[in-house]
Length: 104
Image (spheres, rainbow, N blue to C red):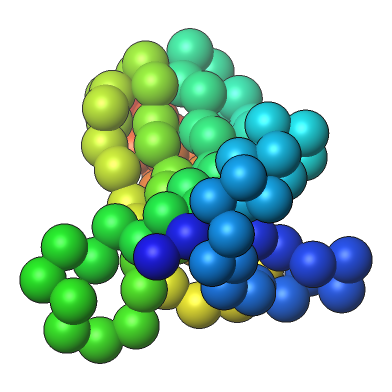
């Protein structure tokens, strides 16, 4: 199933593949992009359900860490824009905490 984000930041199913593809190509799907030292933390709306076993809600958000001690670590979640923002902030705080430990 394909999803888009409406003007109120609500997640909406989009059954029309052409409408979904047009939305996907023309909208900024990044919720957050932060740098902590040499690590980049990026959270995006996937637009496609990544819940492969189809048990539970659709997984539509992904946070990835590139570089640093957690290079290629990934977090995924279902839920709202606000929940994805919280996941992003948690990932940033985790990287900051680990990098602080490395310095001491």
